[in-house]
Length: 191
Ligand code: G4P
Ligand code: NA
Ligand code: NA
Image (cartoon, rainbow, N blue to C red; front, side, top):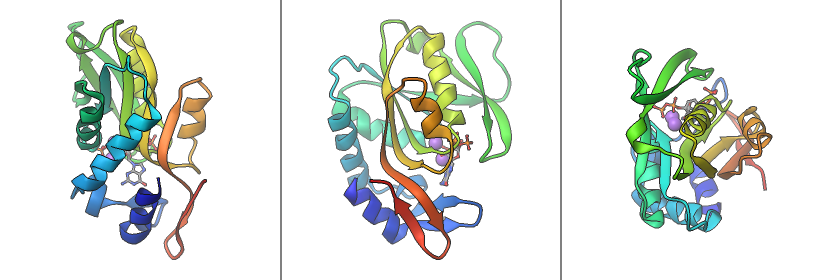
């Protein structure tokens, strides 16, 4: 997505350790005009009328998922990062081991909000090693729901998440794929 790549080039900051900061328009301050274009693009890429739910994970996926949902006319469910495993059986839960954040956490979704009747589009801001996305896929499968695909704003194509999820037969559409990046040279995008 041209507009997004231009914005990353203009306002993204590459930090040591292969971290791309996009705090000024995506991850902290949010450019809602850009979000709208992102939402439209996800709708164009996933025209399937049977998509009836968008699933994301807190925190930074939520805003993008909400704006996107306006183009799908469906609700958003966000997976919550939980302190401990909920054992009362009322939730789907999975464990996510984040390499980026170097910790493991449990995420939960209430059984009230996902069922076998759902055809789910997963939305997130970043795809790196894919632990967050794999966790969300696990939750959708646990609910017996269908996965229409995953819409990602920025994929770090040099990390293994994208290949891993696509190799499972899940359609992943990333609006910008960074093939390489450096503190001095910025981002090189895949086309
Ligand atoms: P991982 O397996 O390497 O941990 O990567 P994953 O794709 O699961 O992403 C883990 C978290 O790190 C995600 O945030 C993701 O948004 C964030 N992340 C990964 N690489 C980058 C990067 O280069 N820049 C920025 N800004 N974020 C990155 P999260 O755990 O969902 O937390 P939240 O930030 O959404 O609250
Ligand atoms: Na994030
Ligand atoms: Na995220």
